[in-house]
Image (cartoon, rainbow, N blue to C red; front, side):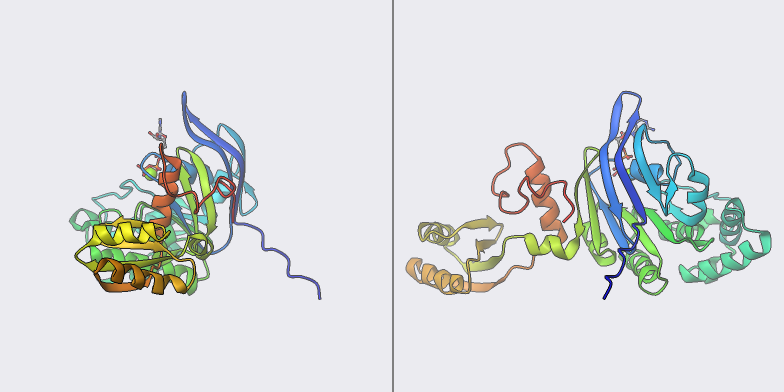
Length: 330
Ligand SMILES: Nc1ncnc2c1ncn2[C@@H]1O[C@H](COP(=O)(O)OP(=O)(O)OP(=O)(O)O)[C@@H](O)[C@H]1O
Ligand SMILES: [Mg+2]
């Protein structure tokens, strides 16, 4: 049997660098983003928006190469933008227009004729939940409705890839949930690819299968989320009635690795016997264990551990992302 060919990545970059004057915003970015949903994570100023603008050919990388759907980022931006929907982080809407005209206009700017742009504007505004508000002026819209309109503008030409820069910014719980569900649906039902940036791990975890983490202009991790989670050391989380400090010392004196997190403690899990050893420790110091269960790490834990590792004086993260793992796709 011949093996299935590896599908071509949607986006590839090698040694991409972007300087704003003397300021280095992207440094030696090597990237491969496959079909599906990818989250771009990084603190303020990490370079997320700059990376999106390079991918879209809106700004030109200072050096290095990049391809999007096999088109050159540096010279074929116009063609790339006809295949990508872009929801920018800034306010890109005209407050004096109603939603239908705004979305139709976005379609026309992307080369659609008036009648197909109008038809699509109706369809996509319904898709983003604005069917009943489509004739209202954007200046009367809430932040959630404006974000949804920006999403409709990005979808008007039925792009293969949707790039959303901080799509949940400023949204309340209901609008956020709807936005995330719509993005997920665009991948699972629409078969499109979504690349979204966020500061909020939960948002990324709800939509994406893969993450790229950027720190100070460099890619520090690119991996499937499941694979990253499986690399985190297993821990048991416990909480006790009173005597937490005694319990902590007792666990340590019995050779277990323990860390306090507010009212809870996490103990490194060496195997199932760790459970009985925790109970032994509790009876030795006379405390009652209230809760004891395997801890399920989430993206937030991973992100914090990685960021901690990148910082100064990092302690206790050696087991997660050793230098061998950093910057390497898993
Ligand atoms: N047009 C510009 N001129 C000069 N410096 C810029 C410009 N745009 C961005 N920068 C700088 O480049 C770095 C990366 O910025 P970028 O906007 O890409 O970060 P980001 O990860 O999107 O941040 P945020 O989470 O705040 O949106 C920052 O230090 C920023 O100040
Ligand atoms: Mg940004």
